[in-house]
Image 1: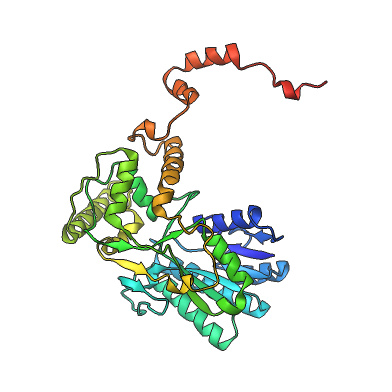
Image 2: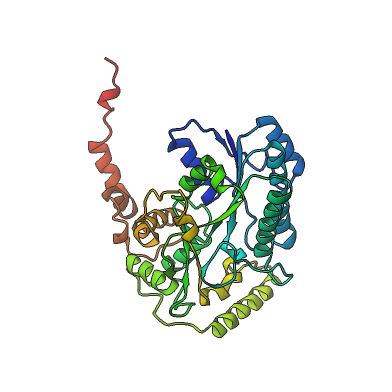
Amino acid sequence: MGVLIGGSGLIGGTLAHYFKTQTSANIDLRAPSSKKLSIRNAVDIRDYLKRVKPDFVINTAIANIGSDSQLSLEVNYVGTLNMARAAAALNIPYIHVSSAATLPTGENLSEEDCLSITPQLNNYAKSKLMAEETLQYMYQNVGLDYTCIRLAVVYGEHDHKIQGFHRLFFSVADESMPVLFTKKGVRHSYSNANKFPHFVHHVLNNREEFGGETYHFVDKTPVELADLILTIRSYLELKSPREIYVPYSMATFGKKTLELLLKGLTRIGINGNLPPELMFLESFYKTQTLSSTKLQESSFVDPTPDENIYTKLPELVVYYLNRWTHANLISTYSEAVLHPNAMSHEFDASPADLLKSVHQDSTSPFKDLRSE
């Protein structure tokens, strides 16, 4: 039995679904809500883990990337520290999910590459980097059995928040990206959420190999940002964004202008915020690719080696367009993309005719449920 922290997110939710439905082993993975276990509260952590006595702990919890310093510190660092202290005391494996935000820009970055901890780092990167450093220290000094897994740009279904890659996708689908806020040749690594649970399961079953180690869990081939955006545009049959590259200086000027505008609007009672991903605007213009060599050379076998962000795009397009359309978040794409069924079309265009049709043909009781 294991405990999962952060089960409501994309990565946490995918892990919970995998251990519940896709494993032959009888593994009970508990994902307590923040009401039962707050990662910010050391007493909650100690009491809960003492009561359930898990065999392992997985921590996918993060504060929102735009959070202030206190929340980032409490969730991303102090929460991680307290979970690790509890795992060390119980002598159980601790799987920590980290981020490429702890790495510099550049190509083919290894697990040993990392940023220096400085006050200038944003709260998210600083807190995640500090967590990595402390876990390594605890491994060396108090015997913590941990594995740190760094993710890059994550993609997958069932993300209830519009963030990261899905924020980019949403901006294209909503036609709110008229031009390309990047430059030619900028590439990034991507992490497949659906494959991730398979790796975590393997890591838990092979502690001698993976204990005390950091791994980059990324697709083998990096992706050019501009090409990905234009591919999404093609799938959605849209005309924008145009293939016009906005210089970084112009993009930062526009960002600062919008920040000043929003600040002014708050004085008359109108609240608005820029997407927190814009704190990483510089990364849209700089390549950051993570080496997958260590992962490829490990004993882990990729369950779907040919699957990547491009092969998943058709599924992602249908899934998120349906989701965002039902939530009335977008309406500007071609409906042919989703191939809506006739009943859905009639519901939108001629509900009276649909009602008449149902009354004529589809109101008889289900025959297979009739009592003999």
